[in-house]
Image: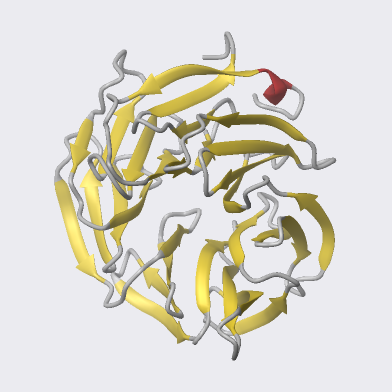
Length: 318
């Protein structure tokens, strides 16, 4: 298990995929299934859009690779038999993990820039950067609620218990500048619960702690703010990576926070004292990736500059 102490000794244990040269910037969205057996990658630019691996197989080649135009994110659904992908046009598709076949496709009726899947895999929070927030019921294939707002929305998240939906934002000002803010809604009804402004230009990323006690916001001022629920009062602040954090994820125990900036690096932060216990960079400013903990708490994955995916852990822990 990764802890703040063992995370100091991480090493690259395995790489997945073939190197893929790209003439444009590259961003990878990664995700594990609940059993920590499967791992997926969405490449937003360059390479094949959607790939996934069976980590029990003794090969670095993906089990399947699919071209999904405009794909921005994907998740394994709780049964680990299907995975869900979402495109920038708001198309939701499910795929068979076992044979790679397309199982279903549905249009949500709106563009999407960020998305967050509920813990039980039944609801999807969809955000458009132009100011639209939607909650989609995956089982019934219909829209639960939709909100329109003139703000610029960025990262979003659903709380572990499904009670809250949150999105980071930049409120547009008269001089074409923006003012950082955070919106919190009742995830079941869409009722706005709280709005909180910060001394920054944007709130890039948000994440709920595994306990559901706090919400963390990464602002453009370089802070990671821990906020109470539902009042969104600041209880503590940690230092973000030097180039700002645009994606956040906690390990299952809630003791480590992975912060991914918009450059070629990721950082693991000890939640207890805010120390950066591990950092890695491949020094390629044209690429970036989410950093994601395996659900069993043993590993962290991150996308490399050549399109491959790396898995880090404590040596002899693989």
